[in-house]
Length: 124
Image 1: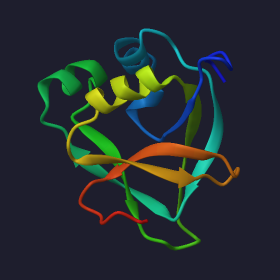
Image 2: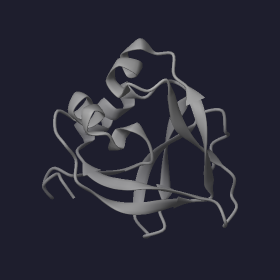
Image 3: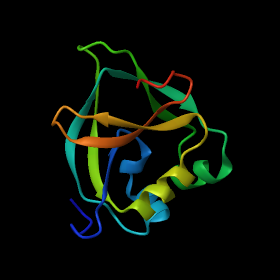
């Protein structure tokens, strides 16, 4: 993982634009190194982005968004990154209000934060 063990206090799972180099540089000021993983019990749909700053950073009008299904057959592939608490706050600022940050357990057994569909009820 990319942050040093002394600094990396959080794990963030990304299945979307936070995996893009341009978004990482704009959001964190550095490129992140991560490990492939999978978010079980979710499926992806697309969300139209209207926030001008997010559109400028990602260059994409539609972003993937994970919705909870609870079905074992469903899962979303992505990357888990070790980041600092300050970097997690930067990620919160980047995400639009359609996303909610939630703590999840990935297929690897790693607990991580992930941004999911805010329209879904909290799963805990």
